[in-house]
Length: 387
Length: 100
Ligand code: SF4
Ligand code: SF4
Image 1 (tube, chains in turn purple, brown):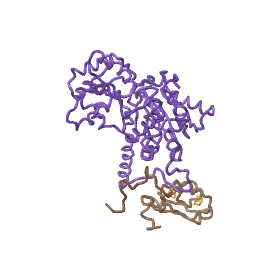
Image 2: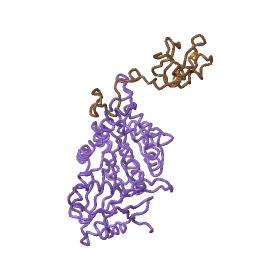
Image 3: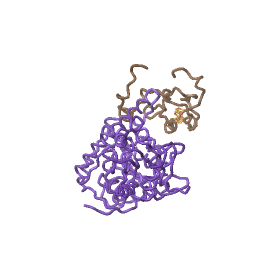
Image 4: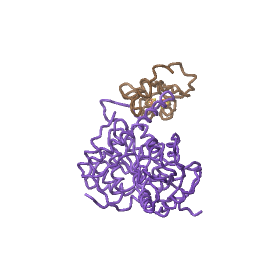
């Protein structure tokens, strides 16, 4: 049944259906409502989750790690500074191979303090070892929360997962969302099988043991192997999801009018919606433009991105965060994807929307226009900035 | 590299060590700089040292302090500081008896 709800509510609904054993969470704008909705479900007895109202995000992830190691299904949510405080423990969750799924309401990092959307918080955890998915809409945030849980818990993966949804733009905006029926959602996610649960007293195990130079490297290589399993499991899970939902996703990214495009954008998150309107407008004027919207950012689908972009003449890679002293992280990913291709597009890097700076259709039209003239170079170009 | 070291494919998921605690096989007392010495004659068996030792290195038998586990004691001195009867004193490790 189609319903009107905010991105927050959509994520909270997915969490209600997943019904984790433990949710440990600390409030931070613009994530707080996810925790508030979930606290209501717990209070009203709708879910049998133990909600741990911790004193910080570092504690939130620590409690999640403890609960997951004990053998529970665990979820959390955060944003911006909260994630920054939590990040030490995200690395540990990944190293211990704990399938903790987190909604990340993307918000700019301080300073200056700001509560609005950009992707700097997501970029901060880029190398932490969690697989990362970006949603364009509340519907995608809902769908990918269910999908992420299943991927995270897959025996070959066993890694934390982060579902990104743009702060305010998605979290606080009401949109039409079609959730699965409870039973279908529960069946899709399935029962959780922990491994070596700490609370299994008959089979004791040591978690978080020290590893010297003789083993640390091997353990990290094994963790990378878990990441390498994500793409196949991701596609497989999308397929399984398409069977139960009235809609299907296919692939690591969405190509929008991309197949015959001469110029294209690559970006992540809610700006894809705006970009599609701009693409349609230019197409109506006969310009061959398209869009590649990333769903799965980590692990990065190098080969598939290269295949999808090889025929394009010029590509604007749009990063919604600065990686100070370097080109945008997504730009670097796309460069790496294309470096071995014989025919490759010229790439230009645009930085946009920092600290919630609005990105309108006009801005996207401007990027497409600018892209025509722009000389490919490792120089950042800024969208909607007062120069 | 010694042959008995496992490859990355042979390691348990997440580095979780099966079989419970590892202190039995891993002796971690070798980096001690100071060594606690127990003087049985002064000891009143209050077990404050056992309660406070951060490394579970006070050995007990039938709820009585019987000595110190030098295989795991780190020489932090907490036991000596907490003992109400000065029944534990710290000496430089180099003056300690080898293997004791
Ligand atoms: S010196 Fe420290 S570690 Fe050793 S027995 Fe005393 S309290 Fe325990
Ligand atoms: S604290 Fe001192 S007196 Fe008490 S049991 Fe330990 S050694 Fe003996």
